[in-house]
Length: 367
Image (cartoon, rainbow, N blue to C red; front, side):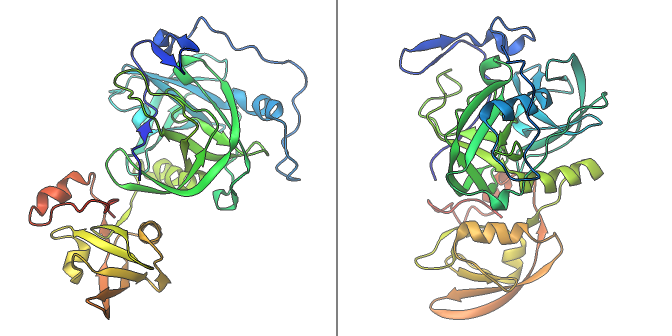
């Protein structure tokens, strides 16, 4: 998996493209940037979710722009969007990292409001905010399992502080895997060529019906956010809306999210299955007898085609569930029973716990 970069805000001027132009990102910290958004005032078309009829990019924008939030903290900026009319807003966890409670949200062209952090989940890079407002227009979350390669994709956000910017593209690929801020894998990620840049983080990725199919989170880039050179190269990644639904429900209920945990790092086996690269000492897999080199072919009665499939199957369960693992070890099939644990806050402790098992190149994720 290639390195992908969170869409972190930049603190200095950045040049976009090969000398074609420049954007001064000082506007990232300014609620009244020098570049203003001009919108067409013709009537907004009704959303097409009932009939499935595709909307034009203009109509998707008109129907959604006043639900997109401009998020600012003491350390940077990002995007978000309204998830319920009573003031709940979704964004990325990395957008509000280091905010120390100093979070503000400007929904549409409304006033800048103080935002309370309801909860965050570093494992999926999602956070839920709450502002004191009512009668906001909530965006509808689509069923991301129905998204197909080639579908229209529209992003609205605040790249480089340029508020409510629309970019247009398609769904380029599905079932990508990216790393979360705490080192665990985020699965079933949507890849798009709609331009997303630093400042788009946390903003919505729409389908042609104006529904949210994902939360823009990371980009593939040859540059570096630290050097001020990272930008769009046509490969962006969005956390799927079905993941967003699950996480938001838990954050709203308790302020935290529970993830099942197996305690392994794996890679794709030669043929079907997920080959174990490392086993976390004292973790659920170690307690069940799983060993480095084992190939997991089935979990809980469902086939494991590859490493990504294993991660998804683990995440479908709850901490405390007992599941059967079918494995191949030295050419022989075995069945183990493992009681899944609660995912720790970071993968860093895993490597420290088992120095006798160095991380194997090509084996990642941690679940």
